[in-house]
Length: 269
Image (cartoon, rainbow, N blue to C red; front, side, top):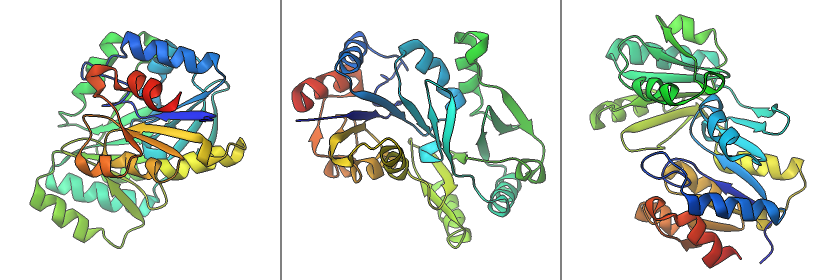
C-alpha cells in the first residue's frame, strides 16, 4: 500500500507506560523517514510539552497539539494553524472550576497555567527535572478566572472530576462553543467546538497536498477516534478500549510491546 504520512498519538501509543520510546519504535520511525514518509505527532499535550520528544527523535514533520487546536511545522517552528477557545467560554469555565475547587490546567503557546492547589501540575515538574532547560515547560499559577481569560487558550484540562460533577459541567456548558473529549482516564479536555485531531490532519493534508486516503494514524484513546474517521488507514493500540478499536482498520500490540513498530511492519508495509 502507498502511504505518504503516518500520524502518531503519544501517550499510550508511541510512548510506553514509562513515557519512553522503545528501541523498536525508534528504528521503525527511522525506517519511515528513510522511505520518505512524513511523520506527524498528534497529541492532547500542549506543544511546549512535546518539543523535548521532537528534539530527541528528530525528523518530525509537524506537531498537532492540544487535540488539534494547534499545528506547528517542526522544521521551521512555524505555526500553521491555531484554534483558540473564545474568551467568554474560558471565563465561564474557569469560574466554574475555581468555585468548585476543581484541579484544572490551561494550555497556551509556550506555557501551562495551573491553579495554586493543583496536584496535576506535578507531572510537569517531574518532566522538567528530566529535561534540559531549553525543553522545560514553563508553569504559571493563575489566581483568578479573569487572569486566564486574558490569554489565548488552546485547551483546558479538568482532572479527576467525579462522574456527577462531570454531568453537571456538561449540562451547564452544553450550549457553549466547546467540544469535550477524553485523552486519558479521569480527565476532560475542553477545546473550541471546531477542534479535533481529525480536522487538524485534514488541514495539514490540504496545505501540503497529501491525499487523506494515503495517510495512516495510530492511537489509543477517545480523542483519537476523529483521526481514524479522517485517514485512509487507522491502527488502534492493543491497550485501546473496545470503543476505539471498533473505529480502527487494524489493531496492533500494546504500547508496552512496541505496538507501533509491530503495526507498521504487519499492516502498512
